[in-house]
Image (tube, rainbow, N blue to C red; front, side, top):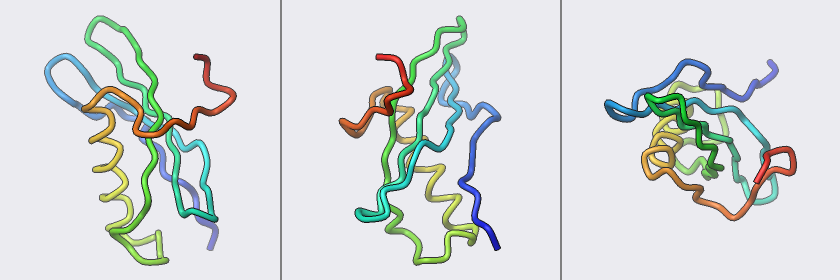
Length: 96
């Protein structure tokens, strides 16, 4: 079975004024770090992109289990709620 990195295309509500979506950027197998680009959208249409990294410590090696997706969404939500990247890494395709 082929594993596909989850996306979050449907906006997830942060509060009355903001929501977020996220796309997978990369996986650092050596360090077991997962990188996503999170787009925070304001009610006024403003968009802020931040980079989120997480280490899947909440689940074992089987990332097809529901706990993986739930933990990943929690980690992305936490970064979106803060409104800033939790890593210095920035993909080369992402404008400054």
